[in-house]
Amino acid sequence: MRTLFPFIGYRDGELFIEKLLVKKIGKEMGTPLYIYSKKAFEYWYKEFDSAFSDVERVTAFAVKSCSNISVLRLLGSMGAGADTVSAGEIFRAITAGISPNKIVFAGIGKRADEMAYALSCNILIFNIESESELYLLNRVAERIGKVANISVRVNPDVNPKTHPYISTGLRTSKFGIEYEKAFDVYMKAKELKWIEPVGVHFHIGSQILDISPFEEATSKIADLVKVLRDKGLSISYFDAGGGLGINYKPEEPYPQTESLAKKIVPYVKSLDCKLITEPGRRISGNSGLLLTSLLFIKENEEKKFYIVDAGMNDCMRPALYQAYHHIVSSVEKERTEKVDVVGPVCETGDIFAKDRDIGVSNEGDYLAILSAGAYGFTMSSNYNSRLRPAEVLVSGNTYTVIRDRDTFGDLIKGEKIIDIG
Image (tube, rainbow, N blue to C red; front, top):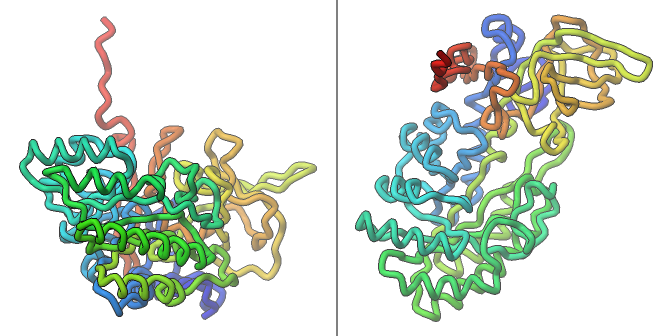
């Protein structure tokens, strides 16, 4: 088998995911279609979580990366917690069976009703991102009669060397509280009756391929923990965020989780803290693909286009920030040709690949958009009134539908036709 990513590759010239022929799944389920590998999820979760085995920890999977409740159920059964950014994600995690005492609630725009819901669920911790949020949470907690455990998301002003749209730890970012102001926020939190500061949190970005910014951020936040403890705060959780990157090209290297752990664990052990991590893409990214059919081949003097039935509404990343996804045919090709792979959505930006060497294909062939397990279906929409894809989970030589394809009825669910008489 010529492996592209773990459990995804070619066997006898045909693309397989685990023991199943991708083409067979496409014929039975139709396209566009998200296909995930159970073994890949297990592999990547173990690869990440085991690297931090020297410390007590909560590996809180970033629900925003892949939020299907069957996926969450699988990861939860392996011990994963959940990093959430909305009441809806908390609902998904709890519905999937993830324990509330392993759920972290992050995000800069939490509403009062979301705070109340999270408190009623007895989640582990809130990551606070502004003073206003702190005071609102205190009022909500008082109304409900439950103390809220918090961390402050501290912005360490560290350059993660990633795409600016997914860089979150710089001084100019909308996320977090400036490092220089964090101490004062903690002192104010200490005085609030319904707030209990129990942790610190940082998150410097996503798809980070250079480990060094993590160490710089960890060192700065560790210094803050010492200062806070000197002032009487019982800081017991050290949340080192997420962001460890993956390889979007099969042949490219990617950072090893063990290397990240070597940078973070010594600080956490010296502080005697429990570690919280928030991996998302690292676990889900290369655990799935988006299968699409080649509808038409169109050529002009400048370009050759492969027009496929998946669009930017199904997989937003390439249109949103020109993200690279490796694209292969379901059948290995001896020759390639330079094409643009484009979708059917009525937007010029509906492009999956520009001037890409793709195996010479024919109309009706299947193409697989790889590394689509993260921020694929979760960012999908019904734009152009297109039906969102089904999702299936492969296990060995069988697959299970874990989300049905949208129907026309789903498109207008909740809408009402007014009486214009």
